[in-house]
Image 1 (tube, rainbow, N blue to C red):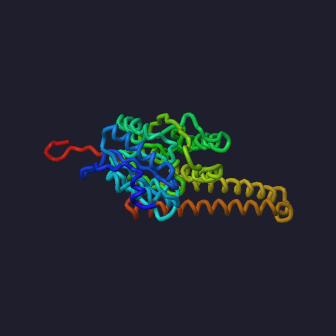
Image 2 (cartoon, helix red, strand yellow):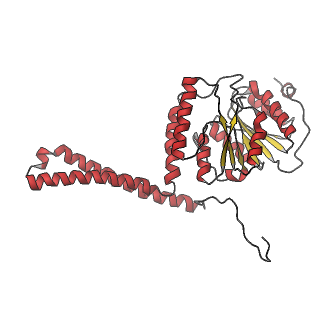
Image 3 (cartoon, helix red, strand yellow):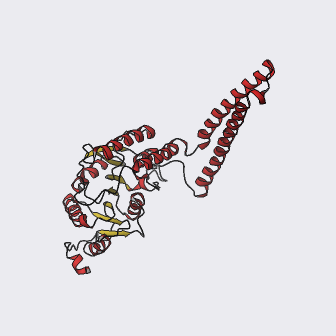
Amino acid sequence: MSDKALMAGFDCIAETTGGTDPRISVVIPLHNEATTLKELYERVRTVMEEFGQSWELVLVNDGSTDETPRLLDALYKTDRRVTVVHLRRNYGQTPALMAGFHHARGELIVSLDGDLQHAPEEIPKFVDKIEEGYDMVSGWRTARTDAFLTRTVPSRIANWLIAKVSGVSVHDFGTTFKAYRKEILADLHLYGDLHRFVPAIMAQNGARIVEIPIKDMGRNQGKSHYGLGRTFRVAFDLLTVGFMRRYMTRPLHFFGKLFVGFSGIAGLIAIFLSYRKFLVGVDIFRDHAPLAALGCVVMLMGVQFLAIGLLSEIMMRIYFESQGKQIYSVRKVCRLEQGGRQ
């Protein structure tokens, strides 16, 4: 298909941002979404033009193998408000979102999926809520259209566990439909599949988070990229987030507890064996050899946890100090300047 034929599928738009950064950036990661791309663009364009604030659309091609790349190249030539980011291969949703965030210029950033499970018409609700003073607005799919046993039930269990571990009262961590103030994304570093834990990570940095209900439209076309197998990845990521939330700057507090626990068990075994040896007079190696070996192994494990904790403390200090990173996040700074001005 020629570029002219591709471009004919989109209405030609001549508007531009006028050389200034837009107020709102809409970030959408895409992977093989050629069948829904035209409708997605037109719906986003319609709602944002009616909303009346300056905007841009950042579309991230996450290694698509269908017509998505060529459609995107045709699209940005018809509308200067569209930015297309092509990734070299399929990295997954988390890297694609981060690429979109890095290339977004708006003061407010709204992210959503590209498969039309999210209604672009709800974007103004997110922006209005952000303007009430929140740092992040997260969508909540109150009525799921997914398969009940393979997706809805595992999702509810995962959301409950994440909320308990993170201490963040959010019902739906998995949805991509969220809005952010740009400044809070400056300290966000995601990898793996951590995009679903963004509310927990943001809360750790002191972000003000609110949840609003959204419609779950279901996929109009195509096939979901997620299945039951992701449950195990979520479980492992949950361990990571839980550890980072509680012990990121003090890992020795975690490994030290393990050291104390294992050393305590080894100590009790040693007291029992000493009693049997010196007060009862039994031969330890003859009567309690397995227990003695277990005590030595448990004590060795405790020492290893202590060593890991100390090494982790050193690594954390290298991480923060060598890169100039802070262990806190500043919302704003207020001071009186010289001459009495605030």
